[in-house]
Structures are given as C-alpha cells and as structure tokens.
Image (cartoon, rainbow over all chains, first blue to last red; front, top):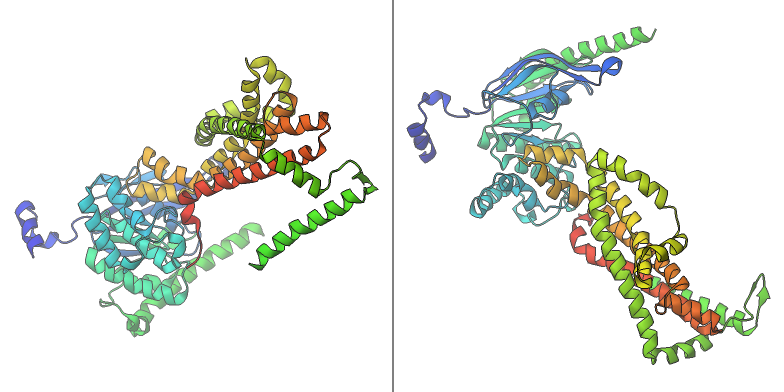
Length: 285
Length: 253
C-alpha cells in the first residue's frame, strides 16, 4: 500500500494506468535478414506486433521459424533490416538491462557462484553493497535457492540453473523479460513445475514477458496471448487470446477450455507446417 | 590405495629390470655394459647430496627456469589475449609464431650466444623461447572460444566492453591459459637443458653433460632423474597454484 501511495504523489497518470506501466513493446514491420547477397535469407518477414505493458505473450512456432530471431531483435542482439522495435518509447539499438534475457541453457557464468551470477546485473548498475545484498536475498528467496547461493552452476540441476537464470535477469527489475525456450532442455516433470513456478514469479513482478516456445501446451498454459509464427520466411500468422482463468494450475492442463485453445493452435500450426513442407518438396521436384 | 600400490610396484619392477640388465652386462640391441646399476647410482647420489656444488647446479637451473618462465608469462599472456581479441593483431603476429615455433631450442643456441651479452642471458633467452609459444597459442585458443551466449547474457545485464572482458572472456580463457602454462613449464625444461648442455658452467643440464665427458656415469643418471623430477614437480606446481581459480570446474551434484 505504501508503494501505491508513493507512486500517486509523483505520477500524474490515472490510477488504472499505474500497475505495470513499463514494458510496452511495439514491433513495427520488422524484417531480419541473415547473410549477404545470394546467400542471404529472410528470417523474419515484416513482423507487426503491439504488446501492452505487463502482458505475458508466447511466440509459438516450429523450429527454425525465426521466433528466436525476433526475440533476439527485441533483446538488441540482432539488428532488423527494416522496421524498428520500440520499448517504452525508446528504440531498441543494443542489449540493455531494461530487457532481461533468459536463454535455453548453459548461459550462467560457470565461474561465478549462484549469488555472484544474480548480483552481476546490480553490480553493473553500480548499486551499493546493501542494495545488492537485499536484491540477491529477494531473488534467491523468490526462486527458492537461498540454500544454494554459494554453489557453482555445475553443481546444480538443469531446473535449478534455469531458476538462477530467471533470478539473474529479474535482479535488474527489467520492464521486459525475454525468454528463449527456457525450459526446452528440461525433462517433462521439471518443465511443468518450472512453468507453474514462473507464473508465480510473474504474478509478483508483473513485467511484460515474451516467451518463445515450440510447445503448444506450454504456450497455452502460460500466456495471455499466443502469437503463432510460420516457417520460412518467419511471419506472424495468428494472434490468439488465451482467456483461461488465473492462477493456472495443473488442473488447467486438463480443462476443456485449455483443450479447445490447444486444438486451435495445433490446427493453425499444422496447416502452416504442411504448407511449408509441400513448398520444400515442390521446390526440389 | 591399490592404485598407489600399483604405481609403486611399477617403479620397483623398473628398478629390478635395470639392476638385472646392468649387473648381467646385457648387450642385446641396446647395451648395458657401461650402465651403472641402481645400487651404484644410489651410493653416488648419497655422496652428491652432501656436496653443496650439486645444489648449486639445481638452484641455478631453477633460477633460469623461473626468470624465463615468468618473462614468457608476462609477454605471452597479453600477446595471446591481444591476438585472440583483434584480428589485426593476430594477422600481424601469427606469421612470426608460425615460422619461429617449429625451431627447436638447440637450433637457437648459436644465435642466442651471438645476440645476448652474457652466457647466462642467452640460456634464459632459450628457456623463454621454449615457454612463450605454448602460452601464446593456448591463450589465443582460450580467448577465442568465449561462448557467445555468455557475452549476450552479460550485455543484457548491463555489462560494457571492459566488464565483458573481466567477467566473461578472461575467466572463460583461464582453463586454457593454465594448460598453456603447464605445457610451457615442461617445454622450458627441454629448452633449458639444451642451453645448459652447450654452454654454461652451472646448471643440472651442464652437470649431466659434463659427467659424460668426465666419465662419471652414475652422475649422468642422477642428472637425468633430477631433471625429470624437477620438470614434473614444477608442472604440478603450476597446475596446483591455478587450482583455486578453477574451482568452478568441479562436476557433481
């Protein structure tokens, strides 16, 4: 409550606009081209997308469709050939701590302990020791790894490593959290646990999340909105609102509403995959 | 425990074969006629251990190794980093390395004597040359294999170029650099010995070679064993002293 009143004093915006006012993403006719000349290939084709602040969006598509590339251009690792990406009114030109990134795997600094990994961002931001301590404690608690703070990543399971990855990205309080198939390398049981875990964390931080996955169940379970992408060239072909009630639990997976939405996504992707498949075969004939 | 027992047993077997071959004066393919037996070598070693001159030989060699090795580190690691980070630097320096590296230490001796003012400095130069190439090459390798995902992760956490270097590139290259240092330590002993055999008045290499010309055969074997022991010991020391920085490599959950 204290935080809300403090915001009211400094922020002239109406109350409704206040929660999660950061993290609005505009993707404006973004194309990404890899390579030059004849070897060049269009990875993302004129992607157009508006993501309001605080939304949980899943980018869903088959492997190699360019969904990670689009994510990487929001992160600032990849420069679009045309168009632009704007986050909170600022054009993305390079990576920055306002856009936290969680990778598929092996992205923790192996020579830093769990604690040192998490405090990396705050240290780069030149926060003082007391602030860093507080942030690290809070993050460790949030991902449930307080007891493992002094361990090196090689001593942790894959699921634990990904939790550290999430905590490390969130330690900078980013307005946008970008996640590139973060649970793709985990076994099925751990993955489900991590998905629930992530929703719990998101419920606390309420930043915008762009989550890349090829797993339909995962996308429908997590997202407010699923954006389906097609292969070669990567195009955004469908925008499906997921109005399943929150909090979502294990029961969500078996609900009829979930099944229906899943079927919808499945059919869209199937159509697209078939189309791409026939094109490739036709091209070779 | 059993593994250590096997290792000790292996040494005992070797000593037994040596004793048998030298006392029986075996002359089949290789000749053991002039090779002293382990017992003779042992008693000669007993005498040497009470002579201060023997220790001077060892200490002089260790000193040369230290100077040559430290200089090679001070020059080799920065050159390796520079070459790993900048294509221009790599193109500029690599031709020298490719031409000079295959030249064995012995071949450098005449030129080293001509180039350096004292015998001591030419021996240290040869030691240094042996050490620097493995250091440079392993440092380049370590720096170049920095995982791209870690660079990206650190950029997204707000790291600039300097921070990426200190927190990502350098620690990532460290295991490879340490391997380079350990190899360099071994090579610098080869090179030192070459230098000491041809020129010098002290040093364990000089001791070994002069024992041959003085027909003191047990001393040759002692010299060889001391060289082997010092080489192994110093290499282990390099690895051991880097261990605190590489604790993160331990596996096991």
